[in-house]
Length: 555
Image (cartoon, rainbow, N blue to C red; front, side):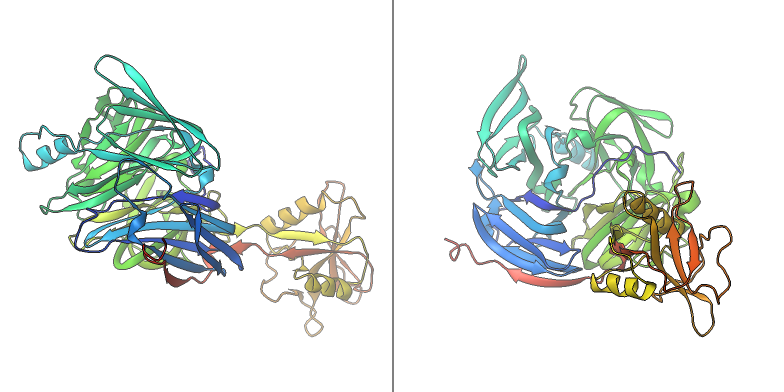
């Protein structure tokens, strides 16, 4: 297993902010569809949406429910100016938010990063789209540059000073302005804008309403730009189905290496696109000499690549079409342990990635799924397709960094005890009345968790656990009836004969451990109660739908 330096980038949270850029053109004959899909993991999760300082939607979601909210046309940002039409999502408990925009065959989707994952320093990538098209069509490069758009959103309820570093004919200079709470500013960028600094956290979106595609058509593209603290040095470039031509855009001064061979040395803030025909043979491992941000570019597609340092143990995928795919990257030695929901992924299509310890596989999925690995970190992308065949999508949402053999954990086990001493049956009832159960240390992990909790307790160190003998067979069984007694932690001389003891307890030994002991059930000691961990992979997901009022109704 690789020793990855993990970043705290779980993509769920309670506070989110985003915006809906223009899709194709505001005068287009077909209406746009702008939606947010908010998925709750806990019962009684209250979600509210605010636009232009006005609360426009409130909802109470239960565990596993997804609320789809449709926004009217007026939220689209098509003017180069300030606006208060950012979209804020706040919740009482943890949720994830999927952003989608569609107009005709022009579609984009992306998970919205919670405010806690945003930053104060961003580099604005410049994508030389004209050069890519000229290379693709073997024509001269057009003189007029594609004018991309950048949206900066103040993510906090404070006045936020923004500084945009630009480069002119003679020297670099800065353009400074202040954004009010949750205000956004959209401007055109042609490569002269290099970096954005802010006093407080902000979100940065790079977008274009209508980039040319190979089918002589156009579609919107949108990229939630990563702050510089989430950059990395090693990337696996995913192989996207039916993507024969591709380019890389690298933000930073760097030496980029593929298969141990240098493929490009980029100058600072270069607009160069690196031709990348290698994807036809499968995903590729590339490395950089320092931290960078890399995008995979194709006509109609901008894909932000996830650095190896951001790989995680489990992911959530939400896909609305039937022709969707998940691209999974896992260590070759343990790729057979990848799970989709509660089941092992059964596939013979894994392909090893050259010069790496990784393999990858593409899996057709639809709906909502959790993909996880019990022992190592993996990378996961999700892709859907427009009617023209152009893919869209991006990295799946990270639910948990750390592997867990039992699944994709949402909440760790919760423990409690009492200062009162009582018999085993009384302890059993005490825990149930508190909506807990007597602790069930049925694995080494559960034993460690319970021991860690008990070591912090200052009272008498003798406790009941949820293990007792069956009165019919005299075999030991967990009272919850769910776990077989495969793991044991009996102390010396235990368990004793059945006629001496029918119930199990724990007490601290000289090693500060809590081995099990068999004792009569009528003895009095303290209960240790436990509420089991909640796992994302055990949730059942369903969806609700809601349309916000039209522009006229909101004014």
